[in-house]
Amino acid sequence: MRNRLSIGWACLLATAIAPLSIGCTATFEAHPPRSVYVARPPPEPLPEMKSGPPAAGMAWIGGYWHFNGTDYVWIPGHWESPRPGWAWKPPAVVYSQQRRAWVYEHGQWQPADPGVAEAKAAH
Image (tube, rainbow, N blue to C red; front, side, top):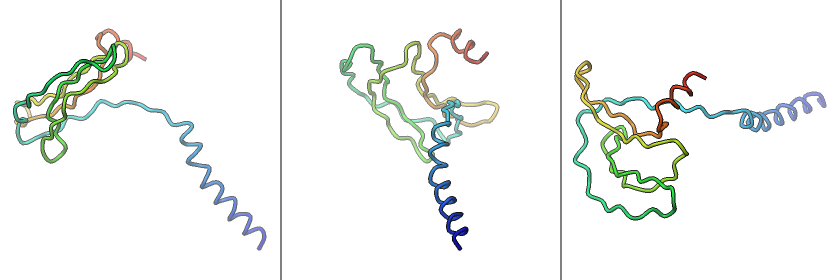
């Protein structure tokens, strides 16, 4: 009886500790966003007022239409603090002749210098 109780406590303790140890060893690896096929291009951009940056070195991300899986939603322009050497590539909707469909490409931060991207890919 006592042995079963000890095994039960050991299992409970292992279950409680396991997520903590996994969290310590987890790493973040960015994957390029997938392209999404959409039925139509987005509406025209909405007019917006660009204010001054709240702090030096911030980058303006202009408002854009984002496809949420069902429809387009407007993401208003805003200021962000970029990582040094990175630039914002806004989302785009292009027509693929090969697929005969509209393709939504997500916006993303990417290295500002193409040489940096090649060096990162080599490692």
